[in-house]
Length: 236
Image 1: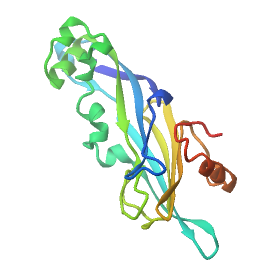
Image 2 (image 1 turned 60 degrees about the vertical axis):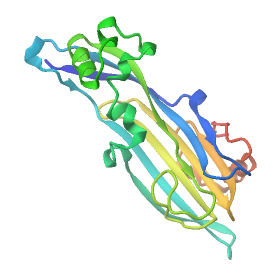
Image 3 (image 1 turned 135 degrees about the vertical axis):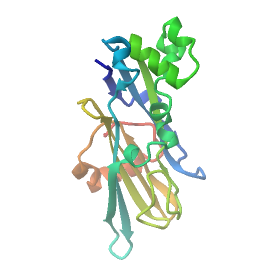
């Protein structure tokens, strides 16, 4: 039997969320956050006949990115479109996913993961993978993301091309992060809004929130009043 990987823990630690930019700060505004993953590999059971491979789940970095435009004539916001998909599947070689796609076995050698001497002494990702397939191991990795948006104009800024171009727009990103075959998920919502090139909402909510609540004018108004406090990651 081949070695197999099990995901034991998936979460976004609030202590690792950091605001980027802010009111009266030039450049992009957003947040840096980390997806914390703990995994365990059960070693192969038939020696070399099982090979050096590891049956490993695929990362699912699902995002729904919604854009809103402002109608000055009616003094109201309206939905302008959305982009939805597994961003890891679209571009697995993105720097965002390097710790998973390129270095997940090498990271097991880090002293913070208490590697056995035989593992710690290895030099390459392939050597680490083969050692873990033979002996098994449990370790942790962090996948870092920095979703952000420019306060003025632009067609990009974080989650792909903008569906609203200009100095006044709102972008909402719903994150649903985990792995194939694993019920554990980490969910979050980021809301960024600008008005005439000035940041008006700078919010990251470290939990799942229904769209009906995120779109509620009363909640949007409250988050506008909290724009100077982008480090508060709860809904209320």
